[in-house]
Length: 173
Image (cartoon, rainbow, N blue to C red; front, side, top):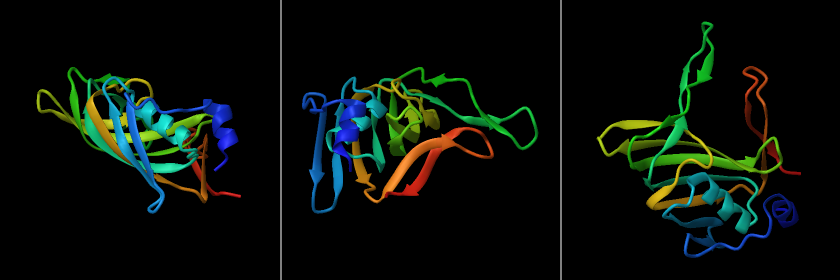
C-alpha cells in the first residue's frame, strides 16, 4: 500500500467519528464499520479506504438509504449489445438488502468504486443495479466489511470488447 499515493489522490484523511465508524482488524486484515445518516454510500467507502491506505479491495454491505440512484443493463440497439439505462432514482427510502463492490483507481487516478446492490423500497418493490457515486445517502446506517487486496492492483481501463471503463486486475509489482 502506497500511503503517499493515496494521500496525494485523496488528501490526509481522518475519519469523522460522528459520520463513520471503522475498525481495522489487524489479525484478519479486514475493516468493518458503519456509515451514518447522510454519508454517501460510495463516498463513505472511499473515505474509509483512504483513511486505512487501502488501494484495492472487495467489500460487502447492507443497510438503509434515503434513496437509491442506479443504472441497469438493458438491450442495446444492435442484437447482442448492451447499454445502461437512464439514471433511476427510487421514490422512497430503501433497505439495501445486499451489496457488493470493488475499490480501485479510476481512469482519472482517483479512488473509484464499482458497486451493485439489491434493495426493497417503502412500497415493497424489489429493484437493483449499478449504484452511482455521490447519489446514495445513508438513512439510518449502512454496515460494511472491506477485504483489502494487498497483492492486487485494480485500475480502470477500457474493455477491449465493449469499450467501457472497467477494473483491470493485475498482480501488484
